[in-house]
Image (cartoon, rainbow, N blue to C red; front, side, top):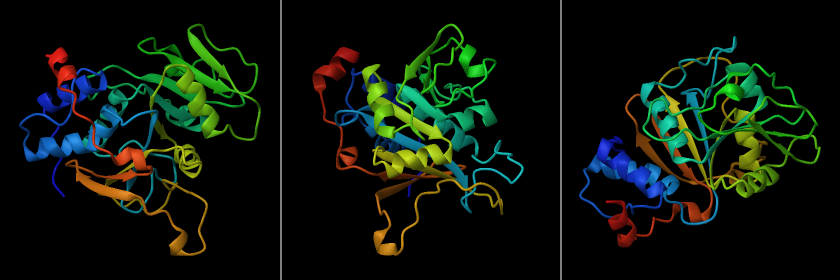
Length: 271
């Protein structure tokens, strides 16, 4: 396992690839820069269709917060920078309403160069209050997915889906695709990520592990149990050292692991 080295020149190439102006297979890169291309390349230049990636940061013992709900420092500084890079490479970042209520996240790219993604909150019953911070941040589009006829502040877009116990991940991805979002980051919480995982709607899953032991508190991913280990998911996985954290990049679909195709004409256009 080698350290990922996200130098300015490799990050610039990744952003250009995400904008369709460069390829990722050309260039004289260091070992660490090649690791960066391997980790972030599938998001920057997906093989086709919609790319949906889930990301969760947790402790060595699989916790995302303490029993009191303190989740402030679960990820180390390099784990946080990794999350912000994922945001910068995606069109939209998706969270569940519980995460919005508990953490009041900003969902910006403060720790990475790039554009803030659109922010999407899954709020079926209309529980999100009007004074929630991300509803009033005009640096990017804000979308609420709901089943009820609840008004939202000016500037907040609403996607109305049929009422069910929990909105279908398939319907959510389809609705966001209609809005022009082809690269989605499912950021939290653990229940939301698990629902997308169990619905087979994730192309990749990033599990960032920080070197601390919490002892008790909410778990990261809680999926439906299996009776035997033979029934457990065993995705193709690569481990990358970020510095303060280690990220496991799990490929969950055949297309997600394919290397980007070189397009010299696009690279020339981006120079």
